[in-house]
Length: 434
Image (cartoon, rainbow, N blue to C red; front, side, top):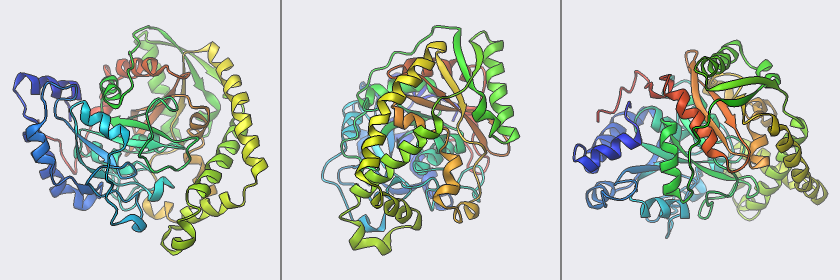
């Protein structure tokens, strides 16, 4: 889709587009294509009714939002990606959904999530660029639906990369805001100390509008040139095509006089990721302590591996990991005195095949979250935008200090104004005609 959300709202206000027309087109496309893609779990049966009756003068002007199936939606099935909750229908909306409704949006449907957000695969969703590949996870349904033009924008959650991984693999824009700036009330927890909720869309320029609808005001920064810190050690661990795409990203910003670049080394990486793992698995085990014993046979193997690992953690390990966080935040914040934005690869490679991931253990999946987990642990905002293509999309991760989302958005918006990676649509699905 070549039009931004801001463009769509402008059209609606001028009478050039009706929310009902947009909704009907999306539903038609979902019925036509999602049998292959499997990005949705359920559609809102009242979607067209809501599109017809909503206030077109509101902030989000009657636009539909696709909501990750980890997030409660009143009167619409919410399964958390698990057969255990296949018949669950929440009585009330998660706070973020309620906020969006007050801002004039409505729920189009629920997008697939990896079971309880405990993985990067999101079965049975497929990558719209290559249906033999994973879309990423755990917000894979949200990313795939946007990439295939089956959604205008979507909600995702991120505990160790679950917004940023699928954003990168599917070639869209995804933001993990500063920890606690977006409410997680009514979102099934993976790890309450690490969980974030954020928006997923195509255009970085739409993020301030979406964040405002979610209850968090952000002012984009237009201060250029910015000082960028390019994480050279992360880059050295990447496949050649990923490395080339990131180098091209940086070179483009320099040539446009948007940025000055220096190579940097991220501190305490292994210690931070080890502490993240301890907190994550400990809290996963705590969340599932009542459900798991009764339903173990209904859990996926990867979920069982994480829960069992968490059950073996000691209280001392957990407390030490929590205490280490303040030290790590202080140290990394000190490094950020040298630059405005840290630039890293999102992942070392493009999306792997479904058949490959099914055989991987937790340890073997680690490279896909290695560059991402630190910023859940630290609580720093991180934004992924598409920056290249090697048969499949490649995304770059931009990170700033807490509450500096506006800097990331301003940089991403400027980059997208001179590139078109974010507007590309997989040929198999075509484009939404609006």
